[in-house]
Image 1 (tube, helix red, strand yellow):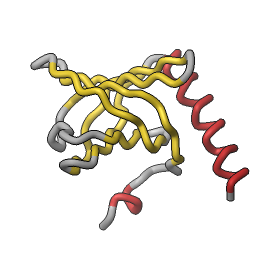
Image 2: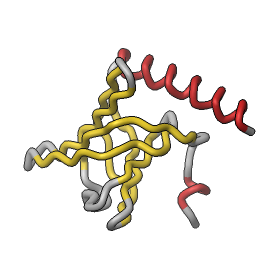
Image 3: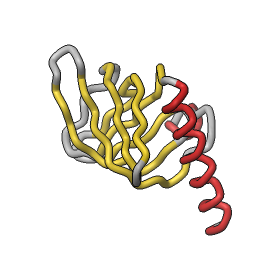
Length: 111
């Protein structure tokens, strides 16, 4: 079964800066978001954390800032990682909703 079959919702192209923090060891990795969904994102990075790692995800786009707890769902060395969102506050949920709405409109416009 490939990754697309397991996704719970549509995923859209979305470019933003991101930082992943593995909190137990306080390891930080700067990366870039390339795809976004309501349930997670794909991050471009050379040395992603292993599958199953619990992380804090921080994403900034323009003036807006999103953060939530997440888990590395799959990891591809020299490429990136898929991160599933786990816990987020209402402010981050509102920002994610707005980003997804904009990304969906952009995808429809370019279809």
